[in-house]
Image 1: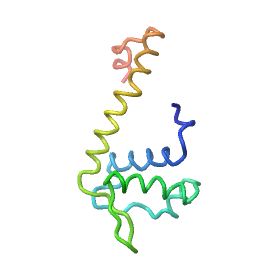
Image 2 (image 1 turned 180 degrees about the horizontal axis):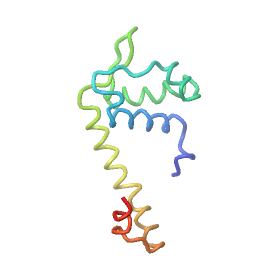
Image 3 (image 1 turned 60 degrees about the vertical axis):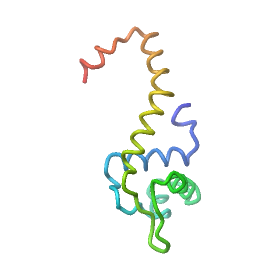
Length: 113
């Protein structure tokens, strides 16, 4: 499934997940409010709330009522593992097959890096 064909809440979830993995939202840090993140992304607050809810369901953030959502300890590593497993299982086979069709060798890619 291409990035553009994915539901908006999943694309927003991917943005937040990347920020947690990269440390822009460190463990113990508060996520932006639903309204602030929605305004920043030009998204509907209900869509952002759905993305945030997924993080809460997965145990990656905790809610402090009246204060906000905070990234829990271990969230970055848990996300990194989940994203890695998903890449290897779902994305890599398609990339590998396309590389074979196009005659691209792995070494060529590493030489350009």
